[in-house]
Amino acid sequence: MSSQGLKCLHSKGKLPDLKSVEVDFCESCVLGKQKRVSFKKTGRVPAKEKLELVHTDVWGPASVSSTGGKQYFVTFIDDHSRKVWVYFLKHKSEVFDAFKRWKARVENETGLKIKKLHSDNGGEYEDSEFKRFCYLSGIKLSRTVPGTPQQNGIAERMNRTLTERARSMRLHSGLPKQFWAEAVNIAAYLINRGPSKPLDLAIPEEIWTGKEVKLSHLKVFGCVSYVHIGDHARNKLDAKSVKCTLVGYGEDEFG
Image (cartoon, rainbow, N blue to C red; front, side):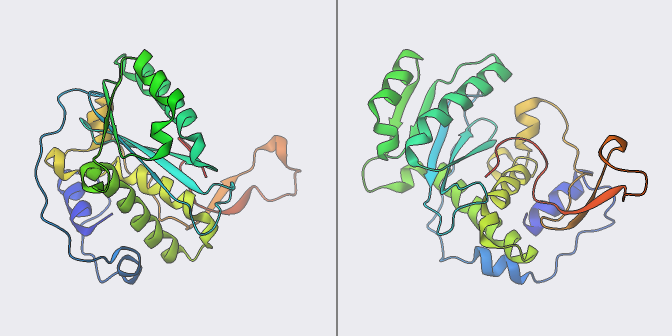
């Protein structure tokens, strides 16, 4: 998370254990996020209702398979709340299955229906079964003009942000490259719980659920942790905990 994001959360009282937020130079951030000067951004108002508009894009293939053998990930971003969901894939052909799983989940959570899905012209979105499923579900499909990825800017930027943050966290942790999916998953977890500029610094997870998020459980990716071993799983003279490395928070998708 950026220093601005940390300062915003601190001002909202989300980080009570921190007296102040003073971020020094972060080499891992520079190595993981440096990019060319961006084009001028155009402002737009988020959708008025959850699932009114959803942005999606596929990233990959990765240069190294994840710990779970995945090479790609697909993101779904709700335009209203700017919450992002990530599903990890072995093949691009799995996008349709990931979308069906995600659709069932979010429509069950909200009681609402997805109205519009915006993507690029990737073959995974042009699949006849995918298009028929959306047609029968009443979902309008919106595509970018070929050769203009800027028209899918929200999803493109999200995937770039996820990979930049994941790269920085993995470099800082010293974990090998195959942990890229775990890092992406935590990056999404943090984005959903951090301030969003398009929402005037509101927090996506709070917009989505209507509940205040708690951040006291957050730890540094790759840090040492100790997990308790229950009485049923050890002998009387065995250690009561096992030393581990934190790579996730136990929810959503894993790589």
